[in-house]
Length: 352
Image (cartoon, rainbow, N blue to C red; front, side, top):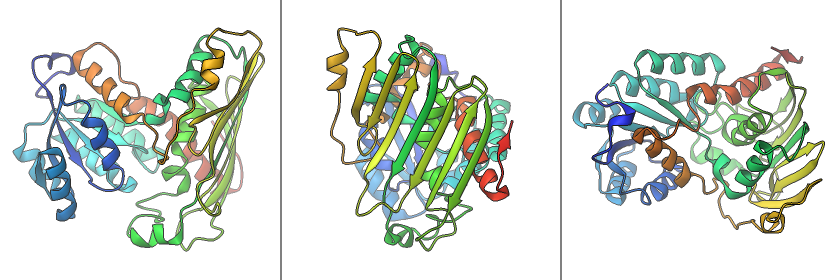
């Protein structure tokens, strides 16, 4: 490994970027706010036009081959934003070069592959970061503060609804991976994974006890599910459920999470958890009214957490904070997602 995370204090972090598709713009917007600490030196995409456009935007070198980029550039870290099914291969390729890795969610399509790449990064002595940026949105942060300060008391139940729309054209345009089992994995992995991660996090990041799920392909011409439901139970007694569909007419309708505890009930809703719809606790705090007004407008389901996520990356490099979500942390929600698919396939609960 060329540089230890805590030793890069006298220069900017040199970042490479792989996959210049739809999500890359959210990363680039965030990285443009961190130019004091991070320098995007190279971008890579198999579609040369996409790589050239991204390179022009970020004033970086462009590549169409990952190994060429790794061989010719001095990099500290690489962000991977390729199709889901390629994440394990690309994570290990970057790790082989002794370069730290940021990967978009999910870190892998299966738990087995997730464990494999996490262990591989440890063997190569590189840090693996997994992106679940929605944890850092304002509304979610307020809920997290309520959890960590004990305002809920014992949490009994967490529910989530992800009622979005992805028309057939969404799958047809990127038909080589959207909706495919080996590249996409399914709507739970691609659309609902942030919500599963949030539920796991709020439940205390404790070990799950059981998962029972039913997923279906009701309307889209794809190889994976377009709708489904799952019920969770964690070892600490918290119950959870999630309903997910990409068939909502005529547009994205709701992305919500409701937490019910002995001393409080909260619902974050809106299209993508961007609105506090209910905020009620046994105790009243001076800033409760302000929290109820902490809603923000969003035209994107991605939220605004990428800026703060890269702030954490910088802090880790400076040696002042631990990773927000390491490879170990990324496995927690992947374990639930993996169990959802196995439960539906076997038509029985998965127990741990």
